[in-house]
Length: 232
Length: 198
Image (cartoon, rainbow over all chains, first blue to last red):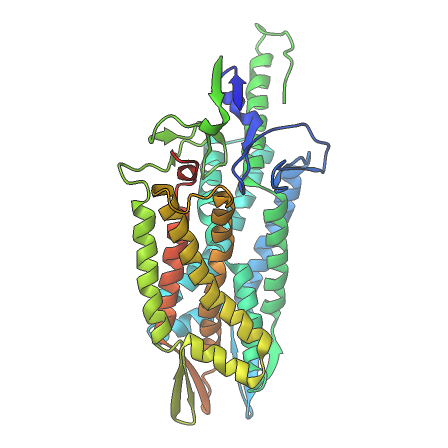
């Protein structure tokens, strides 16, 4: 298939499917709907006019829940009258205490630092997009997000908690703590976010927002008062 | 006016922007990041990570994953022993979860990556029927799930240290975490454009 382009930036209208790597041409879709790959039916992009507001709301909620999940006990057990509980932090510190520095380091990054970092970066990014400021910083945040997103494993950690609860079932009386539920909500928000907001869309949105701003600045100067057709 | 073949288009691994493949020194036009820079051997890095992961997977299966210290008597169990033990106790769903997460997933991932790495270099296995992009996509999706066992050991070791029963993490947990880490790196450093035969 041959594709004709005016210049290289016209490639923005073509998308390569993440799953089957076929080249797909972008089409206009209505608000709130999504475009699927014509080959493998994988969602390619969504169109949401209030993406910034939705993203900001979701990321603030997510950050609150992940911070809460780190503060309170996850599970409490009772064996023969003695009690013991863990928080995420105490779990990591007990691994350090028994000499498993590497495992503790992985856990610290995968389930504490990266999730908190990702959601803080999202808040910052959406705030910048909302305020239409600091384009360079927004770009760097987007690059950083793409690099750390695959290393976030809260969902897998939640499944692991369930597995360990079942393993302890016969051994002890188990009480599920607050953190478990906050982590559960966090994972739901996280799944919803990764499903509804793709980084590719954010790049398109960023380009749109800052180019509009640049155009507005240009139109404000008295020399070029003619209105240009904006293709988006 | 530029005319490009759709086969000549590649996606930036960072920002997903469509780029024209010019050489092996591509820089993304949107985010400015390098798209899989490598000198002569494009699969070298991936192979290196993969071999490290496979080596780390051996001690992960030999040494005990978890040591239970019950009233002074210690008993360690490796991954496979743990699965068998759970099965005998009648915890079938959990033993299947552990079996899939810590044995099937890593091994499938090793095999898939070996298949991909071999098939991009040699004509063997270069079958048109298999969509190798889908194979790669699945290695990316299932990869992190093998962390389940490491997390479980972390939780149990942190939780159960009472006077009567203690659970201590075993040597295998470090080896296993390292193995998973390197398979993830191997999958990330695999250059998808090689699949098209360039």
